[in-house]
Length: 270
Image (cartoon, rainbow, N blue to C red):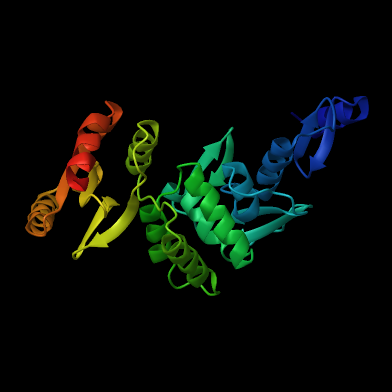
């Protein structure tokens, strides 16, 4: 469209200016998502919703503050109603929700630690766990990649994760583990501790009373020669301490291995 065509449509009310170069079509009554997308367009190529607004999009915290949080990879002028954060985001730390570019949940939680009080961060982490969407491995990868950035956000997110473990909240490391715990709940079985160290071995799920442990074996984490050797050593060590270690693949979890697990828990509690 030419500048003249835009002017004609603005005068007729077919277009409404939202930001420079960004227009609403037909009316000004933009939804929250519409305002977010308009701000992304106005901030320029590569801009994504981040921090508090990303937390709102992921459903782990209300996005009820005044300015829209956006992350960009270069120094730019902030659109009206937006706050810009500068960072070069790798592709694996961005996604889309409803067609709006946004930081991933792991990146969002790490960023959130820089801008909200510790108790707000803990509640957001707890909500991510409740939704079965948290992935500690991804959080740890983001923390490692951004380890040199200033501020106390890294210490805050590590403290929140430690607090979750101390209060025996479920801290998951993969979607497969979340699916496994859903299977446990549906079967009415006791809820295990998750990602705990037993006799020097970290296991995905642990029932201390029954002396039963479970590993949810995704191919991405367990499909290498090194992982194969590590898994054998872990199984042997736990067996020497009288612990029954069960292993379930993604295929097993989708078939609901609740009978095997129930039998194991009953065996271990006798």
